[in-house]
Picture 1 (tube, rainbow, N blue to C red):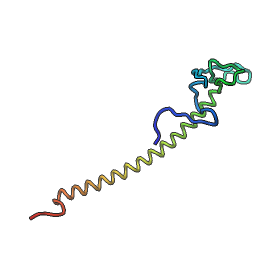
Picture 2 (cartoon, helix red, strand yellow):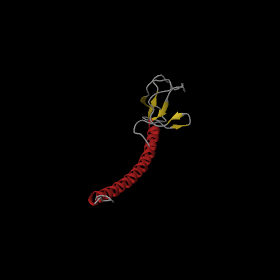
Picture 3 (cartoon, rainbow, N blue to C red):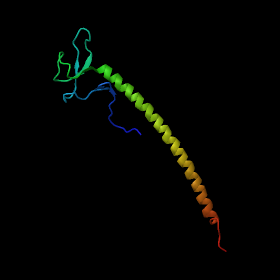
Picture 4 (spheres, rainbow, N blue to C red):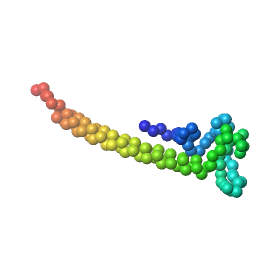
Length: 117
């Protein structure tokens, strides 16, 4: 059964989706690219990082958001399947309860199967 809350999916050696922290432990921040190749493009990075430093976090926000949407679609599909299964179980329980109520009514109305005279 799936539980609501925070999840992370991994691809290779890195987490998918929106990063919260750099591997150094610093909270990820969002900056805007000023390069000619990616003008105005947003990216997540570590406040301790630099262009030369490959240890600290750097990733494009649009790519990570797409990953989150893909993961959410997958979770939504799993939840739909789980809901359908739970509905089927509920239907079966309701039918069983209905049969038991009918049996109980018959027993109560007819005094059971044996009567003492």
